[in-house]
Image (cartoon, helix red, strand yellow):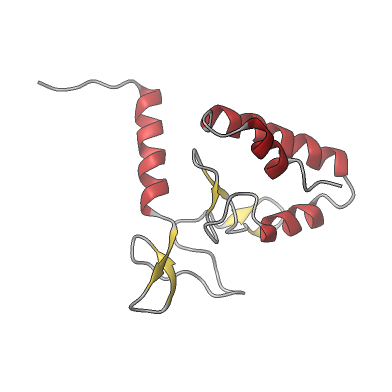
Length: 133
């Protein structure tokens, strides 16, 4: 008997599988962080991890500190997203447009609230908007 799934269920299952498979983990054998799939993570200044998109329009290389959804952890360091590094990158990127940064982080807060309904709203608010000046 085959089980049929709709497209949305397929996409969610695929995203969860990739989020579990491709994330930084500590390797006691190599004594550093490596990708869970076994690939080496890039050193600072190198090209991104093989599973990361290579370019962002007009910016060169994309940050490895992207959110891993639906758990909203950092793809670069494993900390809760936005991590300290990504916050600095976002502040530099939106230096001349702080309102746009607030709108972007507000949209991320809405998406994270939908993904992590179990998390307290105040905690998510501090995490996504509390660091904005």
